[in-house]
Each structure stands twice: as C-alpha cells, then as structure tokens.
Length: 86
Length: 165
Length: 123
Image (cartoon, rainbow over all chains, first blue to last red):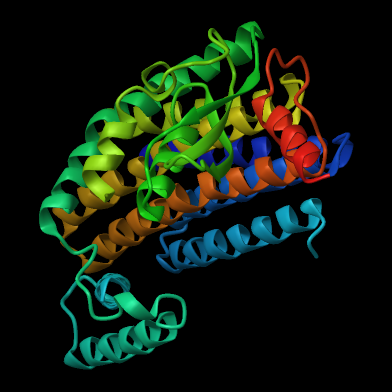
C-alpha cells in the first residue's frame, strides 16, 4: 500500500523533471537553461532516493550522493562559462 | 583538524552496514582522513593543527538554529513562493545591506540561509571599505529601497554571528 | 506512521510540482531561481524524510541492518543537497548579473548602480 504511494510520487517527480526540459530547450538566455538543468539535477537526486525504496536497493542512494556532488561541480563550471571565465 | 574529523565521521557513516564496523574500516577511514587533511593544508597552512570549528557549544547552537528559526523560515518561504507562483504578484529588485560580518564561515552560512528563506536570494558579496561584508540581495517583494537588516532576513544575522564568528 | 509517510510524500511532490510551475511562470532568471531553488530543495527534503521514516519503521519491525543503512545514507544525501543547492544558485545569479542579464521589472538595482560608479572612478 505504502509502496504504491511511493511509486506514484516517483512517477510525478519524473514527469516534473521531464516538463522542466521545456525550459531547457526554449529558455531565452543561457542562464535560464542552466537554472532548468540545476533543478532537473535536484529532482533526479530526489527520484533516485525514492527508487531506492521501490526497488529495495541501498546502492541507488550512494549513486544519488555522488550524483549530487558531480552536478554541483557541473553547475559551477557552467556558471563560470556564462561569466566568460572559461 | 576539522577536515580530518569530518572525513572520518562521514566515511564511517557510509561504511556502516547496520551490524557494526570492522576494525579495518576504521583504519582505512583514519588513513583517508589524514590524506585529505594534508591535501587541504595547501589552502590554509596556518590553521592546520588548530581546533577551530570543533567547539561543541557552537555545534549545539547550530543544531538549535537548524531545527528552530531556519526550519520555520523555510516553511514560511515556501508558502510565500507558492502564493506568488499562483497569483503572479511580484515587485523585484536588488537591494544592498551591510551585514557587519567578517569571517568567511559566517558569511557563507548567512548567504545560504538567505537563499533558502522568504523572498530573498544572494546575488553578490563584496567588501565594504568601512568594515563588514556587503550583501547584494535580490528581493522578490521590495517594500523599502534602503532596508534595515531585520526587515530582510530577520534574526539570521545574529544567529550567524553567534554560531560562526 | 503510514499516514505520516503518505502525507510527507504528498507535500514533497506538491512542492516539486510548484517548482516546475515557477520555472514557466516567472519572467526572468532571478525570479526563476527563487522559485526553483526553494521549492525543489524543500520538496526533496520532504520526500527523503518519508524515505527515512519508512526505513526506520522497517528497521523496527524486521530488525534487518540494511534499512538502517538506507536511512543514514538518505540523510547524508539530503545534507549534501542542502549545502550544494543554494551555493549553485549563488553561482548562477552572480554569473548572470556579471554577464549583463538585468532583472526585468526591477524597481531598484543597487548592484548595477555600484558597478557603474566603480567603473566611472577607475576610468
């Protein structure tokens, strides 16, 4: 019963991440696209933690931790690129 | 020193399998923490053996701050943003505030708190020639063009001074 | 306990959805950053809190160690998210302002005024 609710929540969050890619494609400036990418990364981390419960595997949470760190580094590099430093 | 302690604690938490920890894991954690601490010496060679940042009273204060005013402000911020998303009423602007903070740790903590709490987002930080750090804050609902500290972020400035300076 | 878990999941999903709406509804980069950073961080904290509660409940009822591992690792992931998310938002906002994207409908922009003043002095 509870697992069904977990599955629905994961589905809705995946749908939100998919909808955000609209701004990723259409954003008028590069900064808008980076904002969309950053939020998609956050949602993917949340989704991975939910999927760890649904598929009953702890390894997915470890992947989520590493993904959070790597996406942070990616965001910093993209910010440097917008600023004109790279 | 603070880097060493943190690395060991986080490594042991990640290595804990739910049934206790091997002695081998503890030794690996201490070796890795020492390597990281020596690598970080490049950035800050003076504070290598100091116990700065390990004061338990400050950590207790930080926990109280995290679950008290910060959590409350975060809930308020999200309800506020939800209302603005639905109604679409905004009046944005970038205002300037002198926080009076000097330490890097306190500045970081205040900037992160500001970003996660009602209607404000830190855009840039620069040093004031008269002392203290200047915060440039994007405020989503400007009511005063030259605001005081309390109007924008409430008591967070006091908390940051108490915890991290 | 189950009701609390379901409530946390619903609240978290709702805020994540609001973050998506904010991304489309607000007019410029800075206001979009407001909406997405706050809403997605808060929503992710709530869904992860539901996971932690679920794991603790399983740990209490079955006594298997791996559920304890799940709870601890989820807390570490949320802590990483809570530190890195606002920092990334600062980086984006500062880079956007320095690259010349001005806030739309702004009533006041002290940062641009100060930069102009500084440029005037040095030039």
